[in-house]
Length: 285
Image (cartoon, rainbow, N blue to C red; front, top):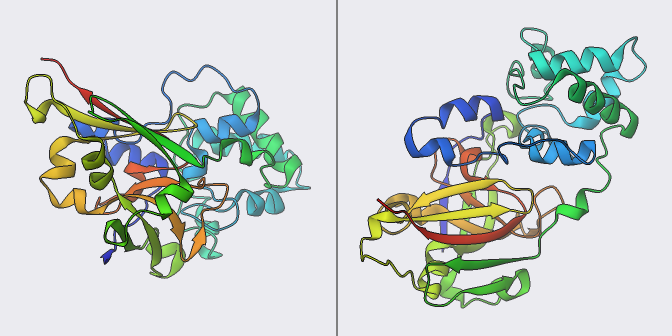
């Protein structure tokens, strides 16, 4: 079965603001209270930089490799780049848009990165030329379903692929219209609803409205859904645990298995790379 979604992926800082009201404030927060990275790659992952800056393909912002190529060799390149990370790039960032290497005119300030961290990150981007070595350590090839369910389980990507044909879904999404000229990307996987039906949710007080579902990545990224989202609204028809994009296995910058809520207005709000676990929780009064 194939469905289609044309929502766009907006930049991390903008999406953060757009997702703020009510429950949406918790939908895609990159590990809160982050105290420091073992290395700059860890910072890129856990601070959400990769949500806007792709490794192999352009996203809403320029690829790290493009940034390194443009800034490399310039006087005070690391300091300049660090300043952009902390303070944003408006209006200077419009150059990336004009060059066709970004879909937004500027970068928002990164309030969760200190000046010293930004300088280290900028130096690392320039030194590695944006290649991001070591990304494979975050790649997930299996995930668990647990919590207040009758039967918890783990699934590998191979096991997910072997689900009955009627349980597999194919969804078309436009991850970033401006970056890809509206090109649709074809995702294949299994609906989150199907996985939860397999696990059988158990509500201690029989009030399913108190049930939330938390999807978590290897890096600590979270996406949260209510029971109503999944089982009693159109949203649930588009929440996909997927393992294939355009007929190919997912790349290292997304993991072998990921999750997306394809009917959301802003797709990055609930796009979980490197999916590690799905936990069903009961919220007490």
